[in-house]
Length: 69
Image (cartoon, rainbow, N blue to C red; front, side, top):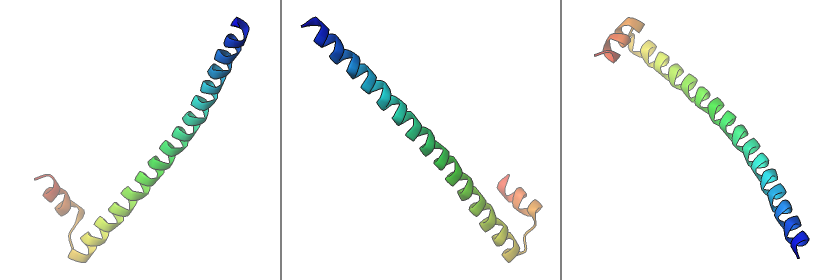
């Protein structure tokens, strides 16, 4: 009975290691995608801010003064 139980535990360990490896890869990919999406979001926000500045005729220095109040 001992050998069979040992084989079962070893299989469970191997399965758990495989699952952890797969999940880590998925996590790393999701984290990379999130980083890229946040960068795209910041670029869109910067573009909107610049367009608003142009539309209102405000300079960079004027906007910075307002932000730093």
